[in-house]
Length: 227
Image (tube, rainbow, N blue to C red; front, top):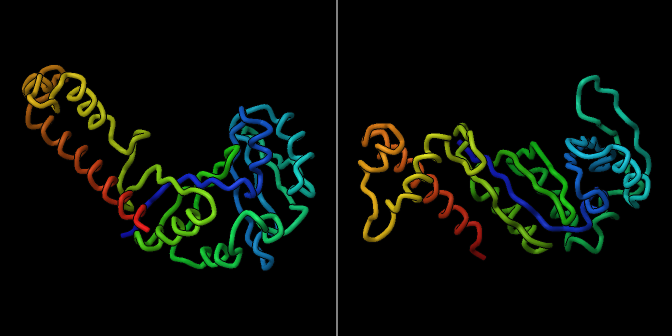
């Protein structure tokens, strides 16, 4: 079945981190272009921010050898970037074992999205199991930090930023606001259901699913945090 995970890693030596640090108001996403030399080119999307400022930062970045604007009518500004140095040289001094990082590309995982931050990358993708995700966690904890931001079962639908459906999130937030989870309770299930305009059975189902999600995510995070 597998898992879909999003996590943040801190490593100042990663490509384009210096660009993101120079233009903190911009949002950059990177697509890796694999080759026999590991990565010989990158595609950088400027999802948000001033392209002129990003171009100036690309020109001054030590990692960037050359870049070319890709014409995408109606799309976000996109650049093909050829590095000035190889990934092994770029990451030298930032990671303890570049070959170990390369080997992660051979695991049963697929990184689908990379967002650059001023301190590292936020990656999201598919992982065959928690053991595979733990290989990534173990490597980055040795070489910076690893923070799990989101974890879903493969195929699970996520419609809000916290991993809950909108009805589940609304039910959970309303129940919390009204004191349903306090001891003793300040509001009954019927009170919360009436506030939301739904039946008590619908509320109960939404709260159970929300609590199950939080429990599964917490246990997974605890497992990934074990040394």
